[in-house]
Length: 516
Image (cartoon, rainbow, N blue to C red; front, side, top):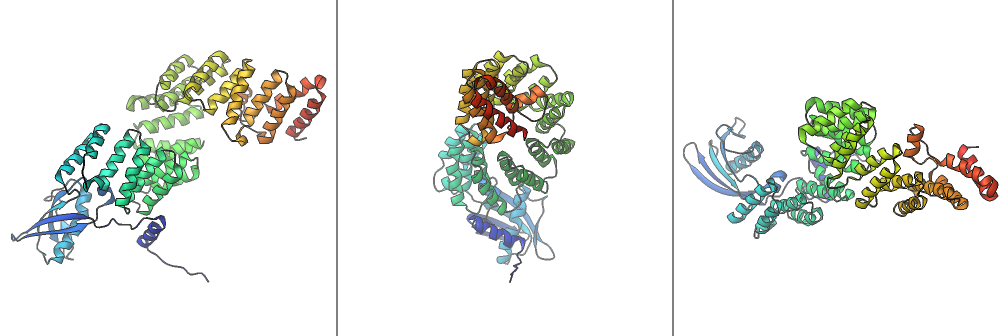
């Protein structure tokens, strides 16, 4: 017999929180609030109480003081006159109005009046000053100085969630993501019900490439409530990095419920682009650009889509506009160089590629794409030189390794080609090495080592007879296929007179490949 239980939204969120190890959907009442209230008749009252803090306010500790002009509606609920009240953030006003009103009601203070409210995050004023200075330094990009200020804060304020949060933030800005994690751990220990902290730690795990940990934390944020549109962006981004495009699209689409402007259309456009769904990517970037036509990420995304669709002139115009609007980045320069190649403006492309190579981080694709341009033009010495320059910086990049091995083979440098192919095999899963085994087979056949050649060609066949081969597709103007069949045919011809055993085995394998 099936039993169905009905839970409302808040109950479901509470259950989800408990399952994920989060203590509650609301923050505990741990911060003292001091109130000085003056009624319209001049009666003065002073009282204190403890309150929760909104999860966002708790990690920021922004505003501590505000003045509320309070009165009661006919239903005896308290309201605030925004024109008379003094506040920095309207959400802060909305948060405190019912809280202070309830405290007045408990004290039988029902007359309209003005309440001066002070939320005391910090117990020591000098600590508060140091924190505010640190926050300003972070906003100015002076992260080392900010860390010194934060470390000067003394107990007990030293372990406030906002102090720990900003210490982690400053370290992250210096790309010290691993060092930032313990501060978020401590902040979560101090405020285990603050969903914002899980989001922040999840972001750092994402930066470290620890995607499952990042997902775990981000789902805890989602369990805390749907108020953070950034949560959907982060989930979409993590899944995209994991090549799980279905979930990446799902969460970008859900994010549209919280932001229906250009933001999530742009997010989803990039996921579609990564997934090779160019038409859907084009539609989303169009929607994003309708709302925000000057945003560089939308412009460069659309430029990449149009380049792949063959609209090179329009693509060049968009990526040029993206650079004019928000400056050069590695991706924008890379896109521009790729477009220039497609337009036959290769001298300009070379200059742009070299500029792109100067950027920090992983710029291996700039070396790879420039080398590929030379390779397609049969400028093999330049291709090899470019690939090897890239490998000096990125020695384990499989694209560079495979392409330099191919160029070396085409250039007759068989031993050097095999060295690179063997290294490729050593650093990746065997199930992905069909191309490398074909390369070894082709090189060995070129040096008349027919038995060894057959062994590697058979290995390529067993692993994946349909392995990808970009150079074959370029040579034959096809979207798929590889050199395995052609190489086996050559091996059959070469071994016919000199090696009966190889001839028989290669002939049989060729028939299998033909499906005979």
